[in-house]
Length: 446
Image 1 (cartoon, rainbow, N blue to C red):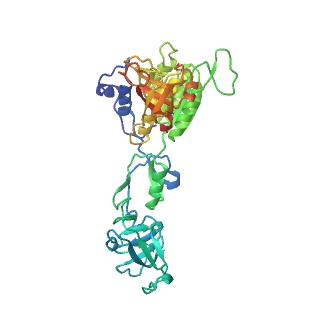
Image 2: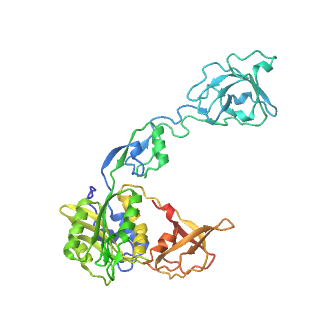
Image 3: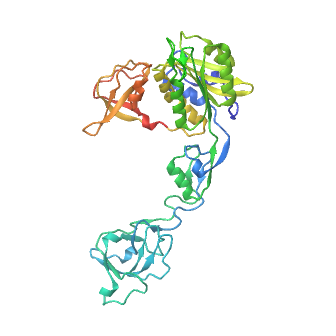
């Protein structure tokens, strides 16, 4: 259902990826392949600012004003000229008046005078420094008979201790947050709470965002039962659809859940066609492993251009990827393994980034944490492994990571117990206890 222009074929992309081998594809090569293949959503809509959280900004947001518009005080205190400060001795200044937030003191401020000022109040003329109110000694006018009273209802005189402020302290400069004509937010940004506030500071009531990506998903397998159905001998409840639903929900896409589809060519083709005609991307779980009933793979191949990969990774070796078409509509296809942990790992390794790219988001690498392995970890070079781990803060301030136990791809509880994935690279071998490894924290995932 993509509204993007025509894209190169799988063969075109394969010819550009060095070392492409569908029977032994590295994680990095698969990621490169997917990044080059997936289309980008082109449709843009104007959205009210309060509704734009989590959406992808479609065009650069350029500031048409200086933020702040004027030099102003960063705190409550007294605005003064730094040239009036004495070197190595206290400075006594007369208070000429008061400037409130959002206002400017309009009176004249002579040499040797200052202005009582509030946070956000405009700095007048050549007043260039603010001394915080808690640092000064105040002498009310009634206690100072050596000088005439202030010309306004000011508070008399203040004494500024020597060396308490430097020229320019506690002054916000006009445009120091954003200057007129500066790009405040770049296109492709997934809008966060701070971005919404930043747009509001520019007076923007609406923002241009890409339309939401539409994603259809379903599970395949005669052994699967939906929640609420009786669990016959040899059958299991379908957890993958709920896991995929949750992961997609955190990405903010529109969802189309097509349920469990049995291993029947007609049912599978109907599901694929419905998904393709109503979504930009289709995600399936199950039916792509060697030795499984090949109805799913046959229908995928018949409806489009699909590559069946064996990726050098654990868990999640089998995967299908490509494009399917139906009645003039096309959609990107991700055929994930059936094992629950493999579904999550392949989603985070390949699908998440691809969907964000399709939605128009600029690529941003997920943050990795370096942690010490609590125990030795066995690993063979030649594949990337994602092992479930529990990261804790050690007494010396470093991070430690321990595996959750058995790492079978069907042990979904291990993903629930873990708070991150230990990422062991393609060429990496076994890890000794105390050696640092990369960990992908789950809290870093949308």
